[in-house]
Image (cartoon, rainbow over all chains, first blue to last red):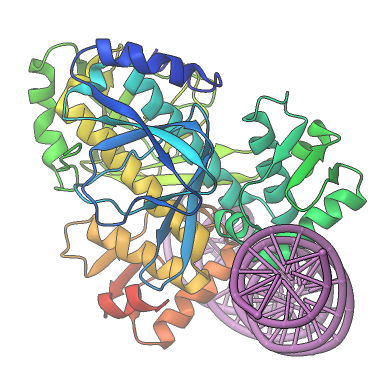
Length: 215
Length: 215
DNA sequence: CGCCTAGTTGATATACATCAACTAATGTGG
DNA sequence: CCACATTAGTTGATGTATATCAACTAGGCG
């Protein structure tokens, strides 16, 4: 069997940070703190570092030649970001709120480290899930899946999603417009599947129904 | 620098097959031949093998809970497929035409092998590109990018794309319907950017214009 | 030759985008 | 602390790209 994942275990990655350091070959520095909107790395930067979020939330995006933006992901405490292929980064990363990250330099052979491999496979899996959403789901399904995904990663037992990102960020992540995202959220509320507590805090009332929307 | 790619070099992967065998830890069998439409692996199969296409073309797909299909990729000679996260495969693979593949068993530590790592990163990069297409492009841009991508991988200097897959396959790869794909191809022809030679053979008349459609 | 599947083309429906106005929340300087 | 500016979010009216439904056409194959 190729892959053993444990990256979903919230917080585990942080605890492993020290462990990683002892595994050999992986250097690490201390925590870096970023204020809201701060750039963590830019498009064109040398790739070769990966990051673990210690607290806060990081947005990773990419701009196309035509100037459109794709938000490739949002990353919360315990999650990894910054894996890229090629020498130069195609994506850029920003803190969405006051956040802390820890950086690891990879210099070539660290994929042998099962922790690193797990992270990489976790990343691969999440991209694949994203692809499935963009390739097959309509607006309300996308937004529902997004909310469930966020809630599941925030330790609240999946019942609540705090949204540090704007409607526009969500839209650029889901391949929609911000108006469509807003209307989809509204419709989910009318369907009694969620309750909004202010614009950026969502209670999920029926997780199963949210995921089953498409079926 | 994390990643050195050479997986784009057509045919290189095949020649490396022997090399891989000597690197230690990676077992390989001989070539398996598959007739048209033959299943190479199924959803639910144990993951842990990867495959290199020796000749022909392989389609990898995934079915959602709602029964919709996403074609995650088409793979030609020299390309790798079958990387998956998790113990069980989420995707299934089929030969689109008479094809040959070579299987490699990965049993845990082979990511240290730079050839394997290159393949994995190549795969990661192609998924990322796919994501960008699905997230930001409209129908005609998607089809144009698809045709250029196919042509670039077929050794004809990028001037010609042979299409072993149906319009429906293309549609399910691009998140469109087959009718929309057909109309987009028609429009590209009217725009004098391509010429159809039968339904499944396309001459690319202006590669740059095809890629610039969105700008 | 005629069946069968793949592909094209047309008419219509619809989901989402676009454009615009309005409202709520957040911050700033006097 | 209030007035105002600024940004984020919502809601409505309308436009448009794509999906859907349907008929027709062209290749392959027995």
